[in-house]
Image (cartoon, rainbow over all chains, first blue to last red; front, side, top):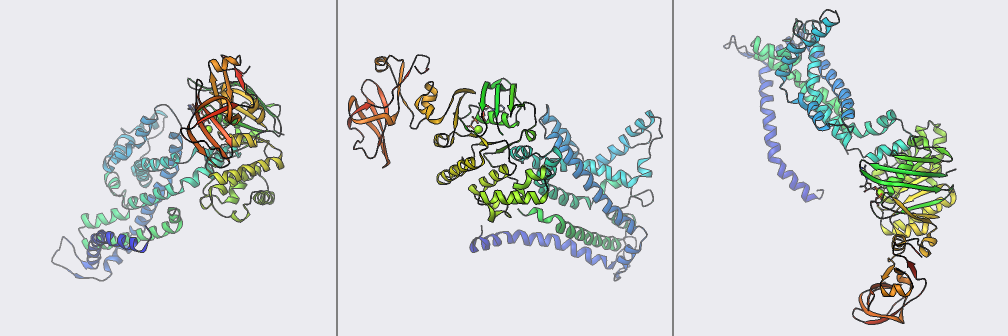
Length: 290
Length: 329
Ligand SMILES: Nc1ncnc2c1ncn2[C@@H]1O[C@H](COP(=O)(O)OP(=O)(O)OP(=O)(O)O)[C@@H](O)[C@H]1O
Ligand SMILES: [Mg+2]
C-alpha cells in the first residue's frame, strides 16, 4: 500500500465518503455558526436580525459560564482519572486465572449496557437517596447522618455516576491490552529481578500506553457532551453548582428558548473541545503511532 | 559458581505428570544440553530450575543451598527465551541494563557492563535501537547480553536458535560455545537439534516422557547408548534396528547398526535401493535388504547406486546389542 498508484487509488476510493462526511459535519456547524450571530428567540420569533458577538458576550459574561467551564473540565478530568486508575486495577485483577472468570468479566462489563438516564436514576434513587438509598442505610447503621449527595456534593456525585458507567469500557480495553502482553516478557522481567511493582512500571504500563491513550481519547469525546446524567439527577443544581457547558446550552435553548445564545454556547463548546483535543494529541497522541 | 542438583524433582499439571521424578547433577562450569522429543518436558524442567514453575515435590539445590522455594530473581540464574522476550519499548541499551537497574546498580557501573557486553556480542552499533529494528540474530544477541551482564551462576537457554535460519544458527552456535569457553559459567541448554547437542555439550541429558534415559558426554551416548531410545535418538540419520533371526545370530533381541557404519560393495547383506539421496559429501540410501527389512545407509562421498539397483552391504563399526526390554547388552 505505498506505491504511487495504490496511494492514488486509495485516495480516489475514500474521496466520496470523505466528501459526504465533510458535508455531514459542515452543514450543522455552519448553521450553528449562522444562528450564533443572530437574534432568534422562540418566544418572539418575529424579532430577528444580526447581533454581532452579543450572543457570545452574553454567554461569556453570564455568571454561570466560568463555573460551567470548570465543571465540564472537572467532569472530564475526574472521570478519566477514576476510570483509568480503577480500570487498570480491575483489569489486572480479572486477568488473573480465577474460577468463574467468564461470569466475572460479564459482571464487570454489565454497567456499560445500562443507559445513562437509567444508570443515573438507579444511583439517585437506590444508592444516594437520603431516605431509601443504600448509602443512607449504611450511614445510619453506623449511627451517622446520611450524606445528602446530590445537594451537598452535586458535581462529585455526577462524576461518580459517570465513572461507574465508563469504568467497564476502560477496564475492557485495558484488559485486552494486558492479555496481549506475552507472558515470556513478564517471566524474563521476573528473572531479571523485577518486583511486582517494577514489572508493572517497566513492562505492563509501557505495553498498555496505547490502550490508555485510546481510552482517554474516546472517553474525552463522550464526556465533553455528558448531559443525561445531570438532567436526570441534579438538573444542573443546586443553583448552578453542577451545570456544565452542554447543560448551560440546553438551558438556553429549551428553558429560555433562545436559539441564538444556545448556538453561541455550542460554538464555544466546539472551540473548547478542539483546545482539549489539541493538548491531548500533543501530550499523548504520539503513543498512537506504532 | 553454578552447581545445580535436582533430587527427586516431580512436576504435575493437574493429573498430567509431566516429570515423574528426576535426579540430576550439574557441575560448575559444565555445558549441559537437554534433548528429547517434542513435549517430553525439556522446557518444563528448565523452568523448574529457573523457578518459573513450582516443583510438585523434590528439591533443587543451587551451589549447595536449597533453592526449591526461592523466587526466580533470588536464584542467580539468567534465562534466554526462545522468543527472546526482549522489552519492545526499551532500547537495546536499556534492555541489557534492565537486570542491573533492577538490582539497584550505579549508573556508571551499569554503563560499563553494558558497553562490555555489547563489545563481546558485536552490538555496539545497535545500542540505541529498539528490538523491533533488529534482525533475528541481533535480537538473540541482545537477549544473551541481557543474561551475561548479571554475571549469573548459570545460564538457561530454551531453544535459543530455533527461530534463526540455518547459516545464522551455525554462527550463533559457535558464538555461544565461545562464550562458554571464556565465561566458564554453567550453561543449561535445551534443544532438539542433534548437531547443537553433539557439538556444544559437555554432557547431554536425554529426556523421554519426563524421564532421564541417559546422561553422558556426547560421544559416550553415541558409542554406548544405554537403551533403544537413546540409540535411536542420538545420531542422524537414525540407527537401524534389526530384530529376528539376524539379531539372534548376535545373541540379542534387537541389534542396532548406525547408517554410517554400513559399507557398500561387498558383504553378507543384499538388497534393492529404494530412495537415494546424493549430497556430494555423503550419499544416503534406503535399501530393502532381503530377510531384514529396510536399512538406511550413509556412505561417504559419491556412491554409484540408484533407485532399483541391487547392491551388497556389510555391517561395520560397532554392532549394538539390546535385550527384549530394550536395554543394551
Ligand atoms: N501449563 C501447563 N499445563 C498443562 N500441561 C502443560 C503445561 N506446560 C506444559 N505442559 C505439558 O507438559 C509436557 C511437556 O511440555 P514442555 O513444554 O516441557 O515440552 P518440551 O520438551 O519443551 O517440548 P518442545 O520441544 O516442543 O518445546 C507437554 O505434554 C505439555 O503439554
Ligand atoms: Mg520447549
